Amino acid sequence: MQFRKSLAWAGAVAALTSLAAGAQADEYPERNVTMYIAYSPGGGTDVMARTMIPYLEKYLPGDGSIAVENKPGAGGEIGFTAIAVAGNDGYSIGMLNVPAVVTPLIQRDPNYDLSSFTMLGNVVSDPGSIVVRADSEFETLEDFVTYVRENPGKLPVGNSAVGGATHTALLRFLGMEDLEVTHVPFPGSAPSRTALLGGHVAASIMGLGEAGEYHKEGTLRILGTMAAERWDEVPDVPTFKELGYDIVAGSDRGMAAPAGIPDDVAAQLAEAVKKAVADPEFQEEARKQLLPLHYMDPDAQAAHIADTLEKMEVVWERTPWGQ
Picture (cartoon, helix red, strand yellow):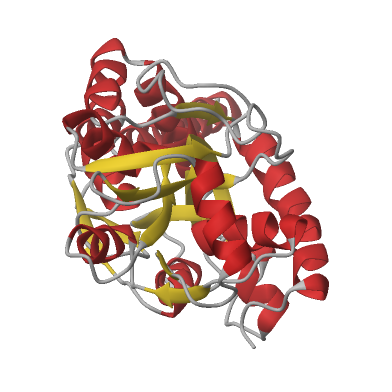
């Protein structure tokens, strides 16, 4: 009899423990989560993150909210490092930009590597685009190429960070055509766009989504985009491939957490990312923000980042952007 009571008691304790563990998992997040953004407020990554946050909160079971902390600088390295070295309790996450997150691994020895992150899913893939003011003398991409070819190194072209997605996309194109410009880096796409609008640079290499609104309203002109095909939101913008330049390049923006976060928390975060991207209301918001959505699950995201690292190593060998 005593043995049966002991078994019953043990079973009750096990059941209560299991219920408690389940309740604890279901309660995540119990407090606010910090999302690190490696670029300045108002840029493409920042806008995407802030647009997505309400939908992440919608699909996470707990009551905690998500607060943004911008950490711009060093081509995104400061923000990526902040994600990597944050606590691994699941209350620190961030936006991971590709190829920006891999370029420091090629140039130097940052305080992270790819194993420093738990991938949570990719959200946006934004192709690089060459953009000028609406009143620019460059009306076509060929006008731009002709001028640069005839005036090597003279044209100031803005980008959102040395070694970042826009910069390396431009380097790839320039290398293909043996062209040279004066690169003018800024700490994010928003200040790069502001400089272009103010006439401080003659052109800028930007994400298609970042420039699309200004192209549609007529203040900027997108000469061409490094996308695989035209985007319905700006159907008049030709691809580089259409214009005879075989290049597809740009920026992927996804989510990650520090390595070592609890498996159940990682699963909940990854599921929230997936559901948020699929949410019709978020998709409508993304359309309004001109965010080119492209979901990849964590495994596909990790494989894509590893592949991008290999491709950027080839670019570095040909054109070392940090030198």
